[in-house]
Amino acid sequence: MRWTNYFLHPADNRYYVFTFREEEHAERFELSLKEDEIPFERNENEFSVPRTHFNEALRHNHLLHADVRKPFIENKGLRWTMLIITGAMLFLALVGAFSSKAYGQKMDSKFGWELAVQGRVSFPFELAGVETQTFSGDGLTSNWNPLQSQSFGVRINNKLSESWTFGTGIMWIRKNYSIDIHYTNDTLGINTSDTIPLLRAMSYRIPYIAETRVKLGKGYYVTAAGGVGVEFVPSNIFQNSSTNGLVGTSEPPRDYDAKLGRRSWASFPFMAELGIQKEPKGENPGFYIGVFWSRSLGKDSGIINTWQSTNTALVKWEGTFSSTLAGVEMRILLE
Image (cartoon, rainbow, N blue to C red; front, side, top):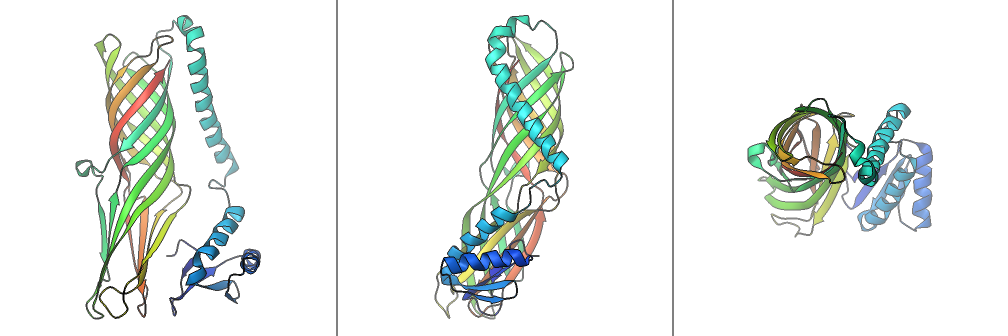
């Protein structure tokens, strides 16, 4: 399984190969290489580029795909639905912020709507399942280490009663990983260890949350919530690197990469939250401080690690895991 249209030449690792499905895209790529005076060889819709010019060719490849790629959500109706929901949340946030002072005294109904602007920080917490994922086979071992991650979003809650609310919204999530890559081959006397320090993945989540509240007094509540969400990943993530070594030693010159991708068009995380909140009152916003946990129902993420050196065949290993997040959250509440 290959998630990018470029890879090391299987017979000569002094070159990278770029492939295209469409003849038109191949023609445009060839024209850009010629304009930038990048040497290449072409065989139908495949291009062989020297490693010394790989970064320049990769830039043209990215620019071409940015121009011709299809929308993340191809279905026009679903795409507009997400845009409308996002716009509505932002609009309500602005309306709540600018009109709370003017209309706060007129909101006399016992129950109503509550808007929250939220920010989250997730930590690598093993007890909550946010732990290193290890994949091993054919002498190649990779450790995917979760790093501190961030989330931002808006949520709107409908106060069904004094004790229960139901809410939805949209969140932007960034997940960060570092990847340790180890390769050993006793026959060839190879033993290497390398690290890709940062791989960033981005997604969007629409939560559906039911929450219950226990009143403490003076406008303070203890809250507990649970629900499910729909999470969309815009694209697969790829990060490659190389290490200069010594030919004929246990650590030869080598190239390695890590890929993180979605397994389907959407995943469905289960979510739980626990915290303390101060209810908003008129023109005075409230706040919420708590902890959260979420885990995808099923294995939603797929990885591929590769390693290759001089005169060594490409080594590749694949795996899957369930995305898990846990950390602290803060919200600003508007009535």
